[in-house]
Length: 106
Image (cartoon, rainbow, N blue to C red; front, side):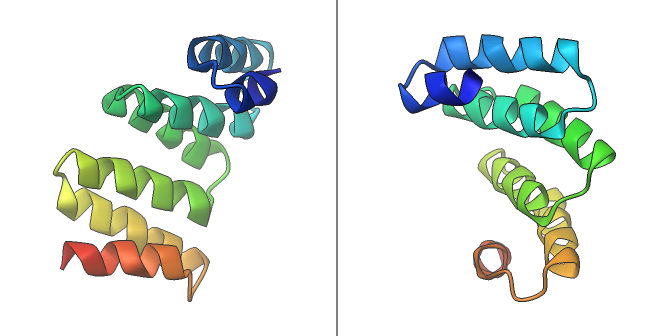
């Protein structure tokens, strides 16, 4: 339901659905990732980082490391962002989006 609401641009409803999905299944990493992405859309970067962190703890992913790095860049935390990008590249060498993000820092 959260994905459907997201496609309709209903960010508040989307966030509520993903929070409910997490309550129902705390191991559902896609819900953490999707919730974080919608929080980013609302400018709630610190909260989004928390959910990306939980997702990465449960199931490390190059894509989520990259997303986390982008949020850290927005917050001006470039050293931490670079570390997230390096983790993404270690998992997925040649990940052009992440390579580009890392290059933007240096």
